[in-house]
Length: 74
Image 1 (tube, helix red, strand yellow):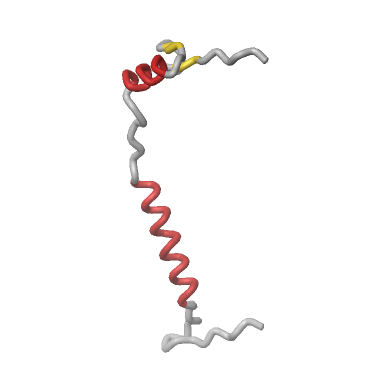
Image 2 (image 1 turned 45 degrees about the horizontal axis):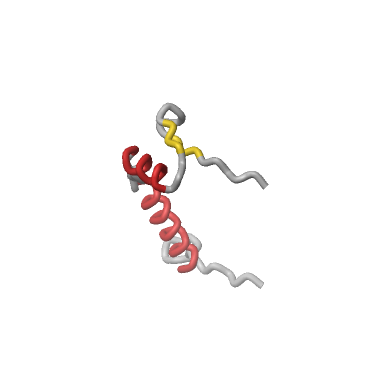
């Protein structure tokens, strides 16, 4: 059974603390996620060096840099 919401001094229903905290937490999460810029993972030169080091072929003209690997045939 849902407990009744007793009105405050102005006659408005009171909000529960859980509802207020949930709305505040949700607002903070949304505000934090939307204002944080995501930096680039690595520079193209670092990605190319890692690709060559791990045995791949670097394709600079595909998607602004793409590492291609040849998988062994079964």
